[in-house]
Length: 69
Image (cartoon, rainbow, N blue to C red; front, side, top):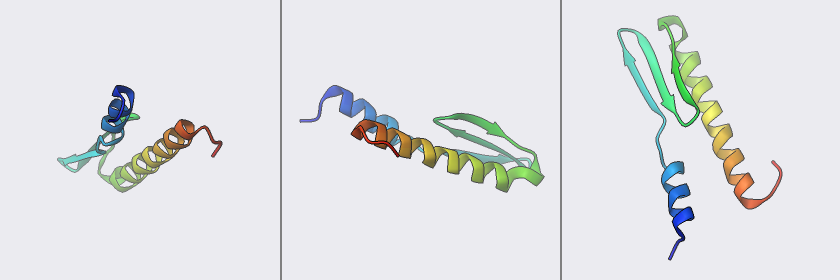
């Protein structure tokens, strides 16, 4: 049976990256924080947020294994 710490980590890792677009503005919410943009920056903001989120997920997984990325 998984430990309590492992269950917490699993729940935390499973949190989605939430992207809301309203009135031609994007609001992106992830583990790293929140990002807002105007309509001309929506694609770039979302892409940046997703790339940062993936990078952080990668760092967390390598940190847990005790290896250096």
